Length: 146
Figure 1 (cartoon, rainbow, N blue to C red):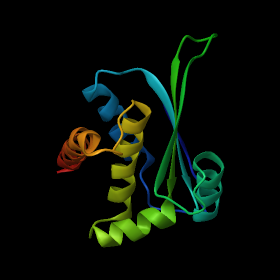
Figure 2 (cartoon, helix red, strand yellow; figure 1 turned 135 degrees about the vertical axis):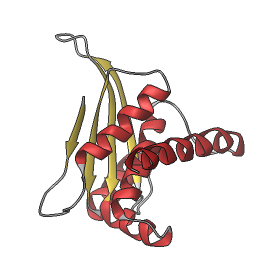
Figure 3 (cartoon, helix red, strand yellow; figure 1 turned 180 degrees about the horizontal axis):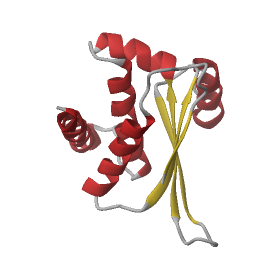
């Protein structure tokens, strides 16, 4: 299950089902079905606070992922973790990439899911694996809409 959280007064016109499907498709492609994830859309102030608290960087960023890696003892369901996306940062990046805010948040949802699954991009070797994979999944999601 994907738990999609956002303040409706903060953002409108974002299809939570599309974001959920992007995350679910990412999990399916990587053969990691049946995992719970929380996706939260937040503002830059909250993102800057979280980035400072957990990464020591006093600035906003586009996406943060927090791996929980736990199994609910009552249900047995696996909780992979939390993805947080800064909507203002995503809006700037959407303009830079000449696509919609929804497309940018979809892309960042895929990116955050890959982080939860252990992918990273700190080294060139990691980038060579993660970036083509996220592009492939994003292209597939966009293709499903056609």
